[in-house]
Image (tube, rainbow, N blue to C red; front, top):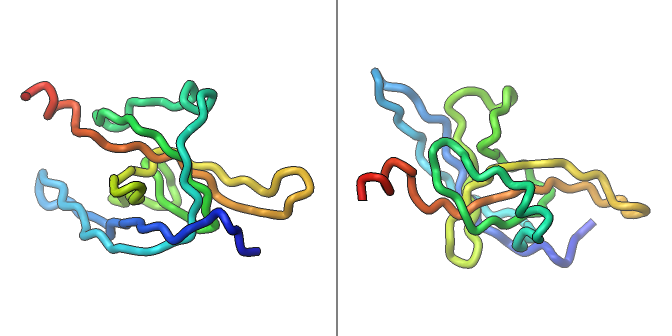
Length: 131
């Protein structure tokens, strides 16, 4: 079923990174286009968001509805070690996927979709301490 609210949206997915000695080398980003509906979080959702994610300062949260499966920063056994979260482009800004959930219809609606929370990544916390 085609959803009229979903628009072509760019995401970047990093291929699997690797460890070389003590250094982590992230994989290159691959650009993809998906159909998604992106909107800001409402007040209730904002109170439920956990802001600490891997030492990063996050703000500017949005929610994404799509039939596509995206990769979030939440730990997941299915993706394995070295897999980085997807980045979504919204209003010219890069947002990292930080949370996810699957929704199977609402009431009489047969729509099945994935809902994700993404945050505008400002900078690493350690970088702000050195500034």
